[in-house]
Image 1 (cartoon, rainbow, N blue to C red):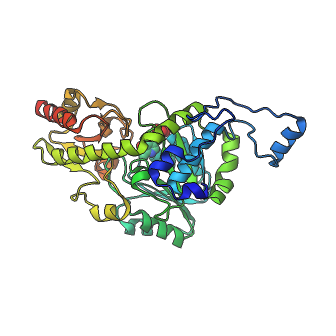
Image 2: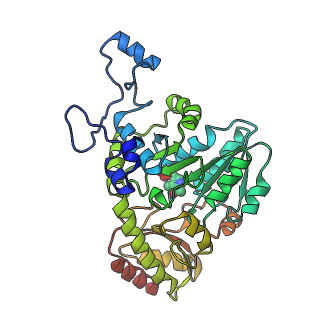
Image 3: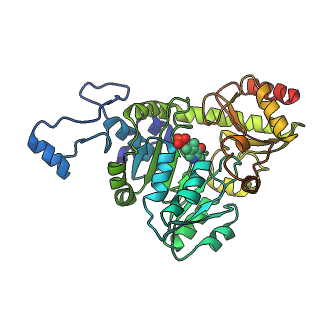
Length: 395
Ligand SMILES: *Cc1c(COP(=O)(O)O)cnc(C)c1O
């Protein structure tokens, strides 16, 4: 982040920050689809490997297009440094595992994306890293879970798919008080509606596959933190294990960032309108939407989010049969497990994204047989309401 970009508002940052132009002065960010780089002389190769010449070496280490994406994300997030990854899960895995060693302990909120939970609950313990999952809504649970060897806290807020929230500033304060780090998966809120680093978190991760691409084209992820944390924990890991983002995906995601602010604003406006419609519908048991005053944790949302999210969680009456009939009757809203897309998408977590959990674990999270997750796209909100209404009547 340069001094110039520091004062930009997010909309300007998303269009301009991080841009590096070649000698041709191209307007659109260039796609450097190359694995390697030429050294004019043997001496310059030596200098580059010694770190005395700042040029690129190999695209597993760094690439100009990927670098533009990382710099734009740093400017948006207010982070000193970042590493882009091939997928969101590569970012989460790196952020959780890179700073830990056998004997350390993680405390994580139970309500997270299924694969994130697998890393904490199943993978980390194989390497001697202990973990405790807590109901992240209550601070007392976080405090009780702390042990002398707790080194990392991990949470997602709002969480997938139930949209429950965690008090990020309170967990960050607890992490600081015990000398641990807090990693926040900020996919659902986006950098436009929640700033974990400003709330005290140490590391932020994204699946860029979601709102950042926003048009369902490619996978990507990113880890953002301070320069020292990235240098000490991620730098060598990325060079030597290779979870790097491809230049083509970085280029696509840079284009996605240009329109992120208008897409998220429009999708959030529509989601608010649709949430109000669904909340009053006789076929619906319950909806959870962070932008509504009846969200169970509306007080925390007011403190840490500036928008209501593009996602809605709902429970239809009649359990799985109704949830399936409703999905099958939709014309515009498509059945898919992506989110943040231009197309409105619906998914049934119990049989898809969260099918690997036991019934008890799902019940604990509030995922019932009638629970659906709705991601609002860029279609006209009234068309979406009409589609949801006709499908609910037919179900
Ligand atoms: C999708 C998602 C991920 C994983 O991202 P991929 O790009 O699919 O690997 C992680 N966390 C959350 C909250 C997500 O929604």
